[in-house]
Image (spheres, rainbow, N blue to C red):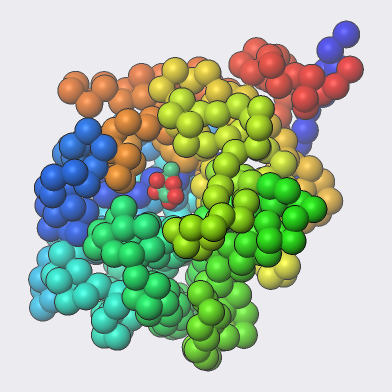
Length: 442
Ligand code: FCB
């Protein structure tokens, strides 16, 4: 007989989804990404963000309704710097006002807003000055932060200055798949150091303007494991990746000592500049030593036998979520899962991925580890960067041609969890029956 039980979460747990401006707004034409999309060969199938989910045209209203109607009580979104500061000497009050309407719209619907200030995209004018390689950029970012916080602070107290600095620097300055498309270790070092300076400056600006602010980092945590644990070279290269990819940025927020790709510098102002740890967890990599210098002598693969997502981008490894939270715990601060999800237009793997990852989150709150909320990536299908529209991460699907939303079964699964503030065996049985023996063994 199937046991009937519910894994409850603590009262006040935040349940939401996460989005990013360039991925959902549409009609962004003056940032580095729109420029990148116009260059041949940069985006899969030549896709462009285009209208995206048309939030700039007002469809955020119906999507926020969807979130609220399905039991969510929080939402993480980002603001687009290139709209707010279209030229170096001009701030758009209209745009700030529009974002104010959006965050007020969240609060009016009972959704606690979290705002990310930099989520991969930046103004083209900034990119043309060298972006985050330019030592002036942290100061410009602080000025931008001031404008946003002044405009939105009535409604927002959770802030993330920079989304996934580790993904940004890796994709844009090591792998060359994000703009500006560089493969340059020295530039990567400079950029990550300046992102730390920008984060630190934003932290001070936010706290000076808002006493109750909670400002967090947001790391894309990969669960790296040696492919052949008995082989010292595999262990060495795994530790190298973990130290540089997962740890380098956030560790600097503890004592101000930045150590990345074999170089170090002191960034004292970055010490003690986070109030919570944001964890984005998607998957695990097995790491093997490789004689080629590419990818720092490493070759990554997914655990044999793991279920893979539709395009093979993500392996379903829920234990990695537990590991990610255990890692985040070392900073001794509240933890928020700021992203987790899977690309799946047919919603075959998503229900299972969702409940199995949330089960791991539940295990950790059950030990009183301080996890305060979970934001699923994402609410509605959106533009997935260099992978374009080939990946569909939404609880709701999106028909780009008509802007019609498609309600995937995971909508109702996630709604059942949010409304219950827990994972009920009945919901798992109904929406993810394959996971029943995993979560509720007989
Ligand atoms: C994360 C990004 C987010 C989205 C998901 C799938 O790394 O922060 O914008 O692309 O991956």
